[in-house]
Image (cartoon, rainbow, N blue to C red; front, side):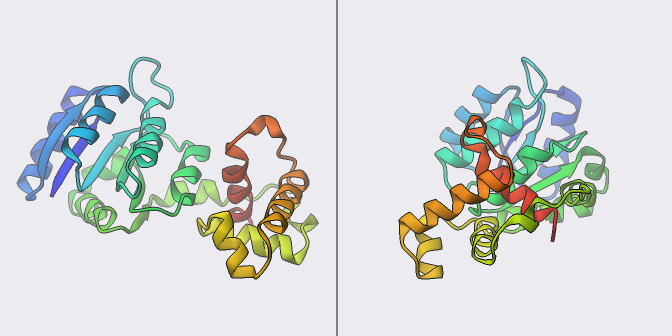
Amino acid sequence: MRVVIAEDHVLLAGGLELLLTAKGFEVAAIAGDAPAFLAAVAEHRPDVTIVDVRLPPGFRDEGVRAAIEARRLHPGLPVLVLSQYVERQYAGELVSDGRGGVGYLLKDRVGRVSEFVDALRRVAAGGTVMDPEVIAQLLTRPAHDPIAALTPREREVLALMAEGKDNATLAARLVITDNAVHKHIGNIFTKLGLSPADSGHRRVLAVLTYLSRQ
């Protein structure tokens, strides 16, 4: 099973390579930044990838953005994200696209070798693995519940969006027109206070709001 790793910390990257090689994986490449990671994925077409959230040059969210871009370029690419912190928005975006295996673990889980390797194999097989701390933060409930403002039909649409369904699938599942789907989604965005300035992230933010109420 081929793996591509995006990790700029030399010791951690080397440790991951030794660990995975000992467990029967083939580490095809180790990338120190986002462009190198995307190039390695295109070259090696790995069975699964491991990505640090924060990569050079800014050490903010370059890694997880690269993971999302890699999944856009290679639909279904299995990605296991490692982070010292929970990047709530991007964790939700990875989960909500509904394509291929995905995992989000805090870095201290790597020390639990058997659990980490099992998680990686599950992601490679198309499964979803979420760190308990990530789940806890995704499900944090604010006092105000904007979901209460949605109509039953709008809630149905949002529930299917949370399953990663596209607009065509929504229309077929609910037996409504594409225009009706667009209208319902627009109403959802408005009622959840998601302005057009949020651009393509509005769908993800709407899904995160829904998941926090389940």
